[in-house]
Image 1 (tube, rainbow, N blue to C red):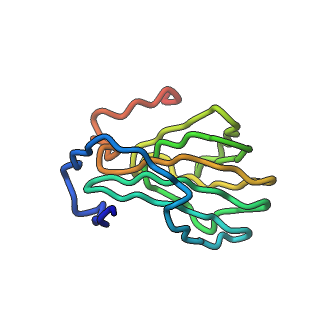
Image 2 (image 1 turned 90 degrees about the vertical axis):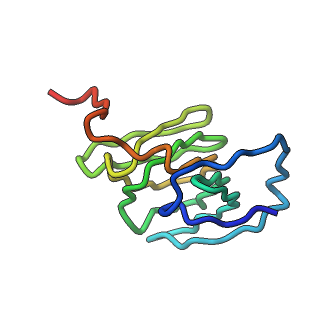
Length: 136
């Protein structure tokens, strides 16, 4: 139903007509972490993708991610560690967002978590427009 597109090559987002999504009807892909499993249900469009992601109990990412995301926690809790040492906990009803290549992050979840994640070209940053409240 949804075509796959290369997020790295696309510069224009698709126009999307109104539709509903039965996430249970979308195939699951499994991605092993350093420990545990991430299960993704993915809709891809030109220039962006939307994923329903579930981290199993004891999940720990096997890499530092530099991609930008908008992440909304639907259930459970997870921790994101940033390369600069800061640690953030995300629980039900919370979200975070980050642009590409700005804050390398690595996630883990002790008891499992369900997330809605949106990423794509609109999260590419322009160096001169970086908002950084931690900058001294």
